[in-house]
Image 1 (cartoon, one colour):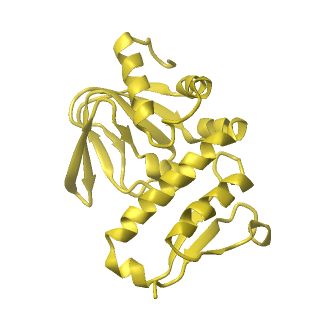
Image 2: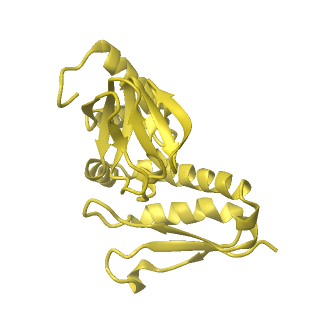
Length: 206
């Protein structure tokens, strides 16, 4: 563990937390071990804001100890404690924070910076398939809970981060995962300006 002394409790929380992140749980043991080393220990004081709604999702957090309040538009919607991941979907989708997360007491989180993860994914593209499946499943859950979305096209943009382009294999796997929810239209990244998003749009449901 970096940026602080490791304790057995924090190591146990880290292992448990990684297993709870859907995109990580089926990684080979050696890759999981390598990924664990990329996390940085960060102390968060009571009342401190860990992330703000609308900010760029530039890191993934795992709660090693403590408790956090999750607020959307000023309204508390949840609390998360030890072992829980925070902000994983915005992180994987290169999106923005959809909630403000504040420490309810002195806490410790494990932080995975976007650039570190991008380099890891370049070394081990095996991680791209479970991420694509995770994003597709979460998108499906969102669509299922939004009747209006079922009759309107939806657009998903995937943007490279940390100086890395979106890997071809990831785009293909994500498109395949999304195709189970209906016909999709893809945009060839070669026809777009450098670093512009690749998009998939689903047509209206008949």
